[in-house]
Image (cartoon, rainbow, N blue to C red; front, side):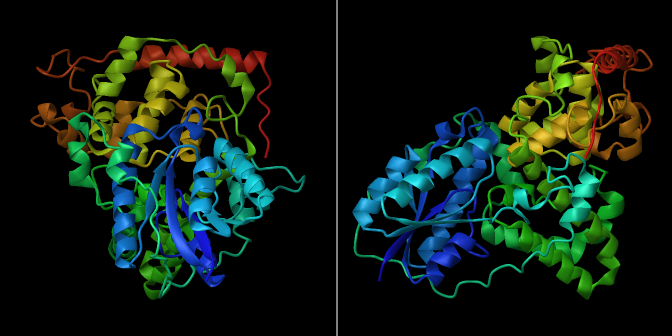
Length: 477
């Protein structure tokens, strides 16, 4: 029986894995491999929090292969040369993988595919991380959309196939040895113990991802439409984002699980539809990155590249540490540092504060999120920051500047979220906790606001008006 390599990347699952399942269907013995090659990702090498997740995801995935009487072979080094060495050692005739859609990965994988095919290998790649290929969805002018709603309407007209059936058996060869390395030797875990809160927050791997998805569909999704903006409610959101990013779940598994749950329980229809819309926002983020590969560093609309952001290390460090004097901002930043995650509503608030009150570059915030989020995803991160900064697709209007105090009152009215992450404020009443120094009294152990909201809002609006007057703001589909 011939041997095929299945090259796993961010598709660390056995179920609904097109590359793996096609390799099995083609009648090969399977050698699963993982190659750690962070330098090939260019400027966006895996951040610290994501490295933590990757370590535990690989560990869980390796255990699944052991249960299949196989072994996940891990390597470190340049991908093409590693593949070529393994091909020689195993006499593999084919290589299978699931596609990545970041610009650097597209270029790398294209070169690898061409080289291996030229050497006589059969090479097959598949879409396993998106509902649709980005090139499938275009407007009437055969151009990519820049606005979500028409993208969403067009996408909904495309069928989404059911997840692939679970493999009953995987044939793995056991008559040779490869010079593999242990997952520990990849040195993915941080050298300082700032990740202790991660272990209390997350269980990593495909098995838990499936459990979390089932639990979400059966118990929590009903509240999603009405409660998803309230960060104090831990069950109002799914927490599936890191599992989707690392491929422990596929988006079509999520999509069809929700449809099935809605069919069984019509009461969750509204919540389910609201969540499916967010799944399409994830799709839109990857779509934009594919069609506009410059956006992780530069604005989608180039006029915003001239916005006069400042460089201020002191303000940046206060924001990073959750010491701005605005409780909802500081609570969010401390949640991020402790858990590697932040509620989406709060992500918008802290991003708005950084870019429009501190007047620091959105790229600086994106870099901090990249390093501290366990679900750090280049597409989602880029879309989110450009949306808030007002320089990207479907962006919030430049004049929308979130008032952190009013947002806190609206979405954390009892101060539960603030009290959890800022215990120094827990004894304040439900009114004072949102603006503890408004009465001029300093709270011991908590800073005064580092900037004045009204003053910085006026300054930001003035700067945005200058950009608007001197450059075209033509935004079309």
